[in-house]
Image 1 (cartoon, rainbow over the protein chains, first blue to last red):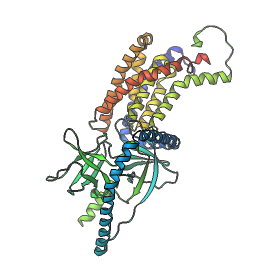
Image 2 (image 1 turned 135 degrees about the horizontal axis):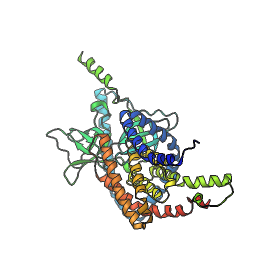
Image 3 (image 1 turned 180 degrees about the vertical axis):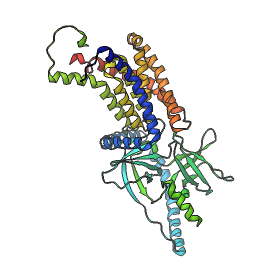
Image 4 (image 1 turned 90 degrees about the vertical axis):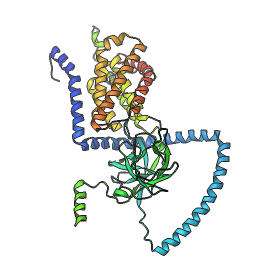
Length: 287
Length: 182
């Protein structure tokens, strides 16, 4: 320890706070100038904490299930009646679906349809909320030798969740479609109109930039479009709902507020190509 | 503080030194643990805001009752932890916690003697300021107008969380975290 005189030590202790505030502003500039530093620090911390959160996630999921169980006990009778009615409707839809499936198979056989390759996927557990006050994202826990990569598409059992934006050695961060920075090219299923789904940080992302002459209809299904080569076509996203201000929003199919397990699909899409590469491709096209 | 009392005392044994160190680091350690728990998948709504509320309440409370156990470097590290856990632009959490710490220290002479309600009122004002500063800095760093409602929710949650956290923390302050009781 260096021995300092008492007045000097007092002066130094008074200086600590302003100096640290200045350092914090420096940190802000550093984070702004080089985004990789923040990403690397975050993923290092996430890699360290993911196994611990993974351990906690298991009992927590048990608690959630128990609470859900208690709740469903209370509404058992009504649920049963509702499910019986729903089952009747679904049986009719099953008949329609099977007929359409058979018809589709014959048509494909006649058209010499080349089937699309089934994408490979990895399943991962959601271990933490990796969003903040102004972001919507989740953290996935992966094994040490995972094959997840940036840009992969995350789906839960019902629909589109988001895309992988950061990869660590044991964890991955998925930006949800509700995040303020999320933009997804979509197709309105009945009118085939293209639009962009823009996240607002709220529970329902907003539908924007639909073409003239096409109006999103309440309750219409919305799927991804292959435009810009960021997503494969036809992944289910949700249904159109108009809010009180008459703005079309999407009610996501995926249960984004209670994600437990997601699948990361590899479609081999090169959406995150560096800018030089895309310029090179444009010049190639011109030739 | 036992240092301020005159008298000759035997040199503390290793166990006692460890006990004192543990008691002194209690505020920062417990705050970082609470932050990590708040980032776990609890399935709560507005968990990010809860995390921010925990950070604001803890820094304010410990700065008020025992600044020796919540020094500026510790506040800096807690802010960094908040930024890294909440994926906010780097440095924003650090700045708001340090400013909160500095303002609380400045008003400590008055607030230390004031009752619980006045401290709560002071915290409410500081929390609103901190959340507004966070909103402004984040908007500036991401170059976009951010929605205001998450910030309002964060401020309300922080103000509401203060009595819930201050009561157990106050008890800990007098028992677990008290170096004199080592």
